[in-house]
Image (cartoon, rainbow, N blue to C red):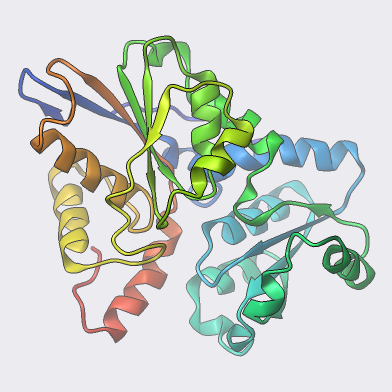
Length: 301
């Protein structure tokens, strides 16, 4: 039923005899249902099938990788899809938004709500009102994180990764790093690079993670979710030119920026072997470039 999982480790991109850094190309799984989105959806789609659900409903913002992935997965595997979208002002701008137009073209039906209403996305009465409107659906939370998503993300780490001392991954809602923590090996340290400000994610991760060998590096969010500056743009463009690897500006780009900076600052012990997880999200680049063009900033190449 599911896309074939593709694991690709590129050549070591930094090896001065001191530090080794490799990237696991989870973005290679599928152009749209890629990386952690594939992992998070895998067992949720199986559960939806077993429950005889025909509709998937989820939540997201204007440029959500998750929204795009759910729409594509629904189309491929025969589900109707509904996206509850944050921001009523987007209702008349779908054609201008590459993520929403992509989701629409893959069959997703939208419900646009105000930011105030969107904050109720976990409330029982709001979910019940959505069932009255759209019928009995299989609910996938914002960002896709639940226990089944964590189960899927545990499959990111395999026996071939045992030799790494550090495994680094971007952090959004905490599901991906929780799975990686659970699947990690003895003596490995898991480092998460949040795209959002604050330490609140530690509590969310602790709900799912069953080990304590992890920490969050909170210095590379660039101001918060979807925030970006010219230094990060330059880094992502230079990285692509040098290593032929496209990074997204919300998650993986910030993580790799952070890893490289920490290496320069001698954060990692000499001889450390680092594995960075590329979680996909490349569909969001076109939307980010629209934003950068409006701000008269350099574009992502």
